[in-house]
Length: 165
Image (cartoon, rainbow, N blue to C red):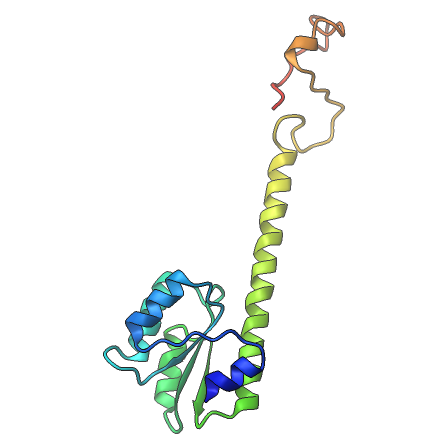
């Protein structure tokens, strides 16, 4: 029932019968978030959570645990093991949608931050590669084949050109 309601909200839903099926789906499909029931056949949801956390960080794969009311110890245990959040049964649908939305927003923000940091690192690395040293000085890079043509070979300020890539 929850899956149908979430699908009507526009989410693409994949169902897993057990922990092994879940792990396989997460590895194969582009899964953005996992709703994980603590009570699963064969392997407990907490064990599945441990395995997922060995493979994916909370930012890479948000996991919301689902379990019964009055299980505060399990809430704390799930959070200690790396769950991003939890829902209690019976599931309050508006709360579930809000928590899912919050986790997906956090994931999107983390991905954007990581991409921005990678671009910045690339730009910073590029500013220190090839021409220049990252400190502004009037330095000119000229390909070796042009050095003799522009009169730069020899002279008091001459130094070999850095190889242009």
